[in-house]
Every structure is written in C-alpha cells, then in structure tokens.
Length: 447
Length: 173
Image 1: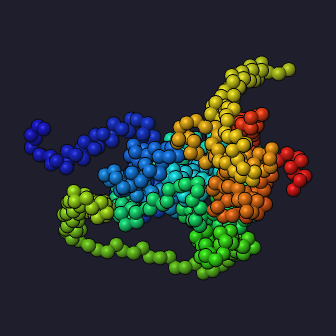
Image 2: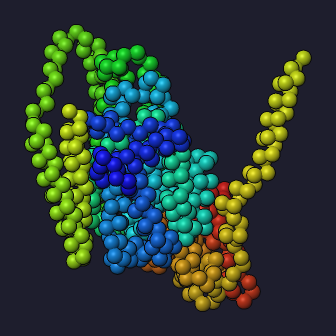
Image 3: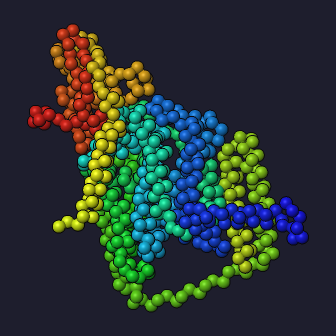
C-alpha cells in the first residue's frame, strides 16, 4: 500500500505474496514434500505420477458434485444419473468429465508404471514407492469399475454380476467378502459399493499416497493445463451414453465392459474355471509387476543390464494390449447363440499369451547378451534449441494471452447460450493455451 | 532363564491382542442378522395354484416397493403335484435374469440366454448355467399348513450364486 520510490507492480505484489505464503508453508508438514516447479521446459515423463494425482483431484471434485444428486437405491440410481445428465444445469458436463477423467487416470497410471519400469526408477531405495504404486494402480481400476456399476444400467448390472461371481468363486474369503458387499440384495449392494466408491477406496488411496509420493514432487502448471484442457475437450466431444435402465426382465445384450477390464473379460470368455481366469491369473499378472524390484537385483541402470525387468515390461505391455483388443472382439453373427458368440478358444488365446512371453523374455535375454557386442550407436549430439529471439517469444506469449481471453469469452458466451458442448471445448482450449503461455514464460525466464 | 524384559514385553503384546479380541464379533455389523432375518410370512395358498402352475412371490416382503422390487427377493413357487410345491429363487445363476417355469417344456427357463433347470430340485441342466461353478438354484424354504396356506420361512443358499445340494440330491443327478 505504501508509496515507495521503487513502485512495485501488481504482479510483483502477487509474486511477493505467493513467496511469503510458500515460506510460511515450509514450516508445515506439507513441505515434508518438496514441490518443485520446473524453471525449464522438462519432459512430462518425469512427473506422470503428479499428472495422475491431478486427475485424481479432478475426479474428487466432480465426484463430490455428482454426489449432490446421485441416489444409491435400486429404484432411483439410474433415474438420478439420468436427471444429472439431462436436467441439472452442467450435470452432463460434470458427469462426462468424471467419466473421462477415470479413463485418463487409469491411462496415466499405467503409462507412469511402464515409464518408471523402463527407466529403472524402482531401484535406489524406491521399492516401497514401487509396491504402493502397483497397489494404487490396481485400486484405481477397481474404483473405476465400481464407479460405472453405480449407474445401474444393464451393462452395470452385468459387470456387478460378473464381479460377484468372481468374488464368490474365490476360496475361503470370497463368499465372506461377497456377503459383506451384497448384503441382502441389490439395495444393500448399491449403498455399499457407493460407500466404497466415494469414501473407502479414495481414503485408502490417499493414505497410500503418503507412502507413494517421493519427497520431491514436480508440479508443472503448463502440462497440468494442457492435460486438463484436453480432458475437457474429450469430455465435450465424446459424451458418455446412459445405456438402458436395468430391469430383471430385459435380456442382457452382448456388451463389452470398459476397456480397462477387457483383459479380464477376455480371460473369462475362454470359459475355463472362473476363479483361475478371473482372479488368480490377473493377480499373478499384477504380482509380476509388484516383484520387479526384488527379482531385478542388477547394479546397472541400462535396459541391457536388466533383462528380467525388460522382459516383464515388454511382456506386460504386449499382454495388456492383446487381451484388451481381444476383449473387444465379439462374433457379430446373430444366428449364433450368445455363448457361441462370446466364446474365445482357450488354446488360441493362451497360445498367443505364451508366445508373447517367450518372445518378450527370450528377446530381453538375447538383447542383454548381445547389446554390448553391438557397436554402440554414436552419441546423439544435443540438439541446439531453435534460436528464437526474446522479442519473438514475448510477442507469441502476448498473442496467446489475448487468444486465451478471447477463448474464455467465447466459452462464457456459449454457456450463456446454453451450448455446453461448445462451451466446454472452449474452456478446455483456454486451459491448453494457459499451459502454453506457462511454457512461453518459462522460455523467457530461463534465459 | 528368560530375561525379565522379554517376559514383560510378551505380556504387554499378549494383553494388547487380548484387548482386540472383542472387536472381532463386531464384524457382524457388516452382515446383520436383522437385515437378513427371514420371518414366517404367508406367500400364497396351494389351492390357488393349478397343478404344474406357478406363482411369483416376494420374500421377505416389507411393503417398501424399493425393497420388494429387488430381484433378490423374487421367488417362484411351482405346484409339481397335487400335494407338493417347490419354491426357488428367480435369479438365474448365469447373469441374474429372472427365470420362470415353462409348462410346455416342463423346465424352469431363463428368458435371457436359455439356461434350463429341473423343476424337481432346481438343478441347472442346460444352457450357460451348465458352465457355472454352482448349478443349484437357491431354495425358498416353505411350510404348507392344513388349509393349504404356504408360509415362507427362510432361504437356503446364496441368491444369484447357488446352494450346496443335499447328499441325496447329488446322488440323484
């Protein structure tokens, strides 16, 4: 407030206030975690986990909003989702963002896992971080699965049904868990999986975050803006259908589940033992990742030093891809019976999976054996950053700021007109532009 | 000679575990008897069902439509002969559609994917149910009094999953 000779601009004051707050926050437990905002443009591969967490926050916010209208009972569940989707202002937007954020979170988590695996981040005393990460990834998928059950359309009840059958088929603890979750019927079931979805699972995940998060966290506003913006645009372009309301008298159609449980669906369609296919093999697959830091004791960090980790990584990617795609394929011939259409030949299916494993692990072994003999590729010369003058960058940043304000204006105007789809696209676009502005400013300040 | 410290530590740990023991029965909170209690309820009269006919009943009936519409509370009663009725859960063991008795085929059939069950014991003989780990329809336990009134008294098995058959039933298949 006081007039001094060096008159601070408003931006200086904001920055000063920000720094003041940060310095005080450093005294709190929050700063056991050190949040690093990169001052250069860095690859997002290093902070995929943070992006996953940001998506988790988006899911939390939209999820709480959905809770205001959702009613977890057999008779009301579907109608309340329909109400949110069709009647409530911005209900469709919130629901679509929540749905697509769940897909994004799973995608980012899996991407994060494979990047960390191939770049050997699970070493150097990161074993606990790795193990909690694998657990968190599994919980994320289960959480998303429970989430789409809550809609209570035909597809949801099919998924609930298969989930219940798998739980029952697990020896000893299975029937116990199923009885606790199902209670005395659908009304208990919906209320209980709802409680799991909105409270218990997120709470367990937040507790695990405290173990999973390293002390140094990278927060990159630019990339966050781009990711969330893209999420909004995707949500606007691909609204998620409601499906048909569940009624016990309506025959179930052949429906493919959400993509992230397609591998499990493909396994079940081989029609071998349910417990083996639906519980044991998926658990073994997850365990394969869990044990990576304990079976790979090599000192080297290069891929050629770590044939086991390389094999697990390649085999994991290929198996996930093949089973996911296979899960989507249903014989379209309407003359065949339901069972004939969804059946997968187990010999073909497991033949392919075994082949994948032989190729992956064999290839990884051969690679580690012969990689050293092969003439090392000439070291890539570091590419000179394209020389752009300071003024040009500043000009681009100003242009982007103007563009952002314009797009924000468009977005608000569209919401005013009631065009949620176009409005949401504009909102997403403005976030993406904000991301690029953040990168532009970083280019200027890092010189 | 055991170290005194060790003894005291052991006692401490043991007392801690002992103090936790009373919490285990609280697990019943998750599957409360009251919720799952099966009162004796009249569900129909045998004389109102023709021989080889069926009725659909809700059990346990609460009067609250949101609960009574639950597929898990839907049962069917078949009059298999002059003096005998059989009662099963209507939830198909395959994908939880609601099944009913088809007089022309003399089988209980699922409208969705054609699973078929015997009316005598609820055993799944054909269709997708034949590939389920458990093929026995849960049974609604009933009593018929001298007036022909049918009373439901309980449920045998896990609805939507199956039940463990009696030894003589296992021998009969």
